[in-house]
Length: 358
Image 1 (spheres, rainbow, N blue to C red):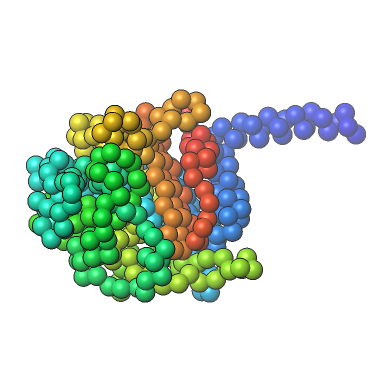
Image 2: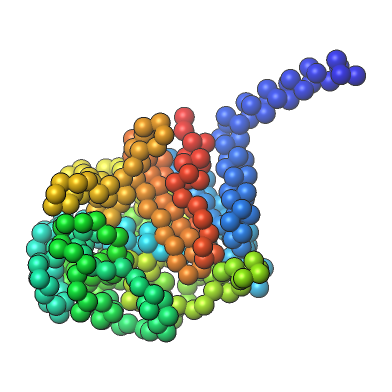
């Protein structure tokens, strides 16, 4: 019996190995990995997408976008991006620099006159590279009740009068509030409100129809519900938030497909000039010459094989997001979940990218 079954087993293993190298086989494996990740992090839903050469080659949803309504996640489901939102603000900055409307090394008061002057000038470049000395969130910020801000500049009241943590340029310190101020700079440089500027400079040029700010007052097709895990490990609804004070730093919604299109446009000709891309993806330095590993918003790294990649993650109430792009191979990967505290990052995105290498 064993002798008769051995050739069949060999043929089956060979067929399975060949299938794994086909487009369908790669997608089957990507699908298995994504669902396994969803279960591992205990997220109700998860969305994943991969683009190669600027084309989305795979996008799929797993689990539930709305647990109570039993609505499944689809490629059209929109998730909170958390700090990946900073990359959209950085893109608008880059486009305004190209248009000659924004000087990265001017004092921020040129664009936001209402922002108090500090002991030393702060520049948009320092804000974009987390070098400005602006503080990040503190515990009291997380217990503030939701508040609606009509304009990005209004939300600066939360931190604008606080002292700087260090002289601008001297240290790297990650700060979402710094990006909120950068969003106000975008408004001042463009002469238009933040949402309009993002629409004109990023969303429309890149045809990102499923991307925008997370406005709780607006009916948004495809917006997922947001969840957390209770002390007993059971899924519960996440508390409501209003992200109007932090749209530039953490307040966007998008699909995974839109994210990989967005990333792909940053490593190809057409959307940005080559010198602008160089600006985005060159590590900034402190005043002492120490590289930070961060360019204009994007984080810059190499994988275990020495390949360059650019990335950013996001964590927010009811969401986890990660975006990665390999510039030389033009492979972009996005992962999105609708659960607070879900943990995944470069490792998971790199494994998906590996499946789609030639």
